Figure (cartoon, rainbow, N blue to C red):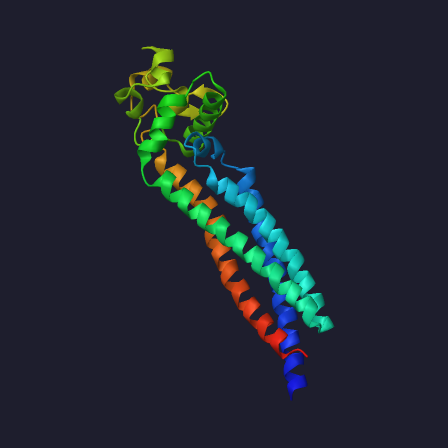
Length: 251
């Protein structure tokens, strides 16, 4: 009877670890996607001094791949039915589990700091857009991409550019009240109505702010690292419990 239970548990541990290896690879892939930063949000995070979401992504790359390797080892250890191998497996999984918890928590707290108040993002925009520094070049490139991709202007509204003092205003004077990327453009021909955009006509420029787009983008990054990470952790906790029972029953 005991032998039958051990064999059944061995099969369950093997199957669970195969799934654990797959979820580890998926976590690693999602974390790589965040690190690659397809929406180019890193400069906005870095300017605030809160780029923890990308640090969390690097941790998740390590933990995801480590879960994959350790789960494969867990399959081998379960099939060998050796307590020493299973104990090594459990210790490794626990260490990875702790690191992945840190990754999830870091990503969530970083999101709350950046997205709780648009003023932080607005300050960066006004301070660094068209600034000659390295950080200014990065922020300018990011905002140009955001305004064109999301068809938006400013953080909350286009009036951000005229209601507050900014580096852009100092550099452009009265020539342009807002960046050229706030203007509606035709593919291949450039700005559709330059004079209308300069005057601020609603038909010639984007009328919504960009903060909601930045929020949704960083939320995608956060989901990839934290919420998927938490779901992986819940599954791994279940795997560890079954593995512990298996170790206890081994001779």
